[in-house]
Image (cartoon, rainbow over all chains, first blue to last red; front, side, top):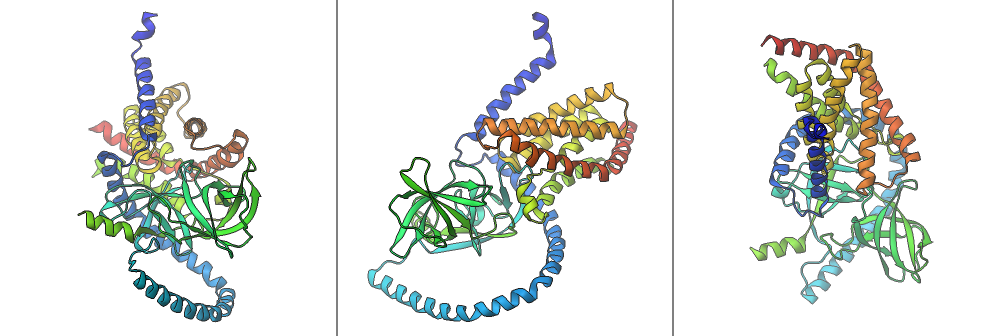
Length: 287
Length: 172
């Protein structure tokens, strides 16, 4: 037995396993912020990644453009048809906007949950391990990014900021499995909006799960799902997707909807990090 | 300048994984099969075999730590496994004839072990709920395929480079 304990390597192995478990435990703790050493490493590697990533993206972009040219004719035809609809919509939006502003002026309510400040960011890395779908972007706390902020592309919501360091931040895409990844959302219905929570992603159907919908709520296919802006730092009205199918929940007390995401989670190069205007105002007041 | 070549190579491998995953066309194949490039791991193994064991373990430790901090945000997982696997590889190579094909084969075995180990940890901490019968065809096999292609293309030039570095280190 004493010989067993004298084996230096074995002891070293055991000690490092204990150390490993401790480290994993430490990193799984619900951390608000990364330690300064982690932030330093992330920012330094972020700079190196940016150096390599930009040229590579340019080259890849060129090949993608060649592909795109092939599809141009078809797309052009479709877009021309859409353009007429667009003009009408545009006029309607203008009048509505003006009306909204006037009504707001009457109510003396300046900031709404809808207003946000966009922070544009470029993807400089992606988790190659692929257990968690995360991407690294080149904007951090110095540019005003904070943990849990919403991240969008022009077509819709794609995820939220997992951790922010000084000059880079990690974005967790909506497709990753995470029990804590809750987003309050609502379905735009004819009779009024129905609230629910986005809770996870079905990989086989490639759809988000909108759970905890009241059982008597009337939801139809193709209705739009938006962020509700309740709790957290998400603004209201970011498009998430559209309802694909509604099924009873596993306990039968509530309903669950499969939501087809509006944005492509996988194909992201440029993203917009969304900072709520209401929060920015509050921050300034605090100063 | 020659002294900086090995760290430069390490950085190149570190960035290459993320680049490959990011620039890969995002088609159905990409979404369906979760292949993971393990080029950095292969690099650590090759350094262990062709430079020295000490180099391999130190590079394994540092690169593993970087990988943990930058990509996965679960500390310790790769730091521990890269170092340990470098040690085991050095011991294993003593049993076999030192030939490129043997190194490549052992690297593939090591990748399988690494994938299983990481899968186990992910299950343990509840970050995934993938059952094993899905893990095997959707993750393990595509991962092996990607890395086998990489080994076919780059194992020989990598070996030559590393041997040059080793000769230079010995002369000093």
